[in-house]
Image (cartoon, helix red, strand yellow):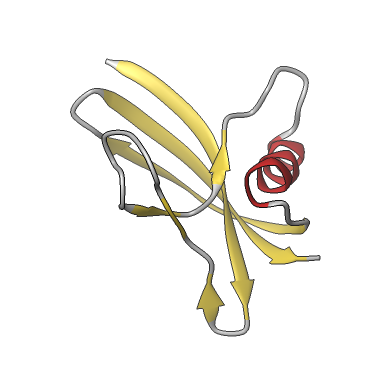
Amino acid sequence: MKQIEVVAAIIRKGDKIFATQLGYGEWKDWWEVPGGKVETGETPEEALVREIREELSAGINVDDFLCTVEHDYPAFHLKMHCYLCSLV
């Protein structure tokens, strides 16, 4: 089975958590926390800052590692490293 490893930004503001709605593909209209793949030479924290800047035109601080979540989808196995973040 294909393995995908990503990082995710759990962006908090007060008692709210930011989520994005997918606009295309098989999972269109589903909700997710923003993030993406780590590029060669990047740390997970650098990847999160880059992905959020590219996807959302926003700046974040990566505050703390939260957990790693793994899930088997029909076509792939996902390993997602989650970090608590705050908006800059």
